[in-house]
Length: 299
Ligand code: NAI
Image 1 (cartoon, rainbow, N blue to C red):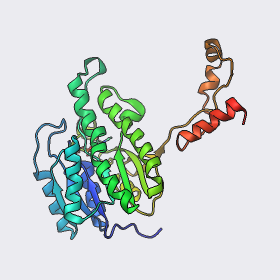
Image 2: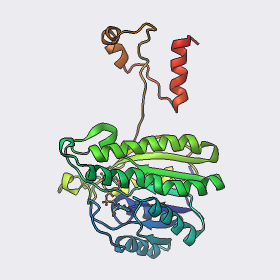
Image 3: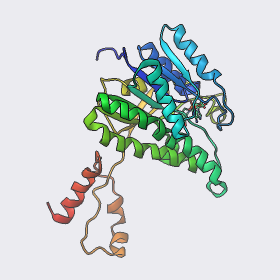
Image 4: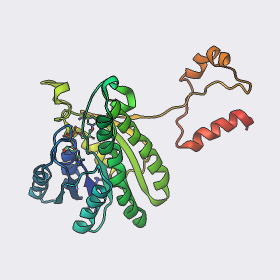
């Protein structure tokens, strides 16, 4: 495999003032990408704002001999998303790569969840990805090239206590990724999601003094590969933690078919319905439709 490089390419990385986003920005910059370091600069829960974290990362990139500009717009509004993409256009003339990484936490058990906590978290993670990716997608479509990487989480994919707002937003990003993969295919725009596990300020309470192996730096090689023109994979979700990279996928069991189905049939065949043996991994809705038509039309 030739070395992965981004010479002449422009990447927007949201929430890149620290943690995982900073590592992605440094990794892509070292490999020649010009970077928009976006970060609102607030707390883990998204309170406050400060341009300093984004500017610090820009300085680090310049010190490496790279090119970068800071952007302190929030991803959580449509205007903010447009402004972030405009920063890329104004500074570097285009955008090739978007890494949706900005995120906040406002955990509460579902019984105590409030509309404010739900909306704020969904606005940053899920709507934020919409708002940044859409104006970038228009540029990518015109040039018939683009790479979109969105940061999901095992909290949504697998479930985690106290994170109904966060988990819903993160699984929403999987849905967005899969639709962008379908819509981007004919324009050579790929969309993939990552589910990282890393020791950052967001997780330091959970990991405490242990788990230094889960260095956020070790997530960035996956981002770099997905962001490169060498990778044509699209619509997929990858776990990345401490140097271990795996694929999450959505499988469909062979199931049980009965054209005069009753609730008792469902109960009687519950084990068959749930049996994972012989599952398929449909690429999009057509993959499932083919299977359904096979059953109902016998074709
Ligand atoms: P972090 O707190 O260091 O990074 C998040 C960054 O997003 C912060 O710098 C913050 O200022 C920025 N941000 C927040 N709201 C913003 C907004 N409205 N507009 C622009 N920037 C904003 O935490 P970490 O761990 O680096 O998180 C990065 C991403 O990875 C997040 O989306 C997080 O949910 C996700 N993630 C992290 C995991 C981990 O184990 N650290 C696990 C699964 C997902």
